Image (cartoon, rainbow, N blue to C red; front, side, top):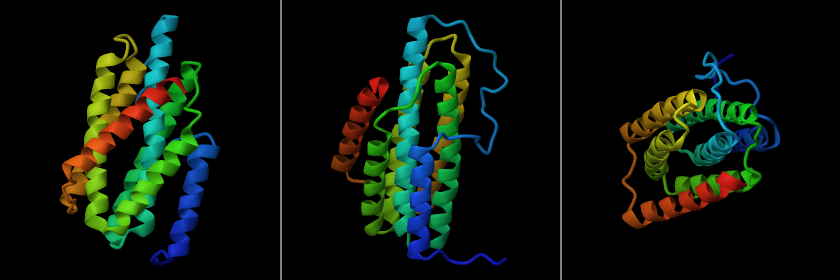
Length: 214
């Protein structure tokens, strides 16, 4: 069967399906093996487990937001190749979502209860920036991934030294987030104005502090 261009209705239905899979259903089986699958569980204290779970909950919330952002961009993308690039990145991000969810279960914790809020807000930002054109959509993705990489680097500093499983997941996520940002730049991402970058940083800090506990 030949590929066909997606209609606006196709894109909308795909976004609804993605939202339901991201928020209403467990992430389930990822398409790739969890980077921590072959790593033995470490002996962690209750405080260390709670802290690691808080950080992985933040990472999970970030992946929920990433799904919303990419789907928001894709639903209004003008260039078919850019739309496919965004969908490919979203597929990899869905693996990140599943890996974080698996790690949270191992730590006897669950994802953020505010996941619908993170998804809806990111979707709105993605769609709104996409209306301005693909270069601005790519600009938001490039800046988001830059900030996410810095955030994941900070988690590698803050995770318990003995938590090799969480560290393996975060390192793999960081490498792929960096590649997504580079792909967006190569595709023609616009440089976002400083005030928008600062607003994105403030929003990310709010989500991080909230998701750590909720």
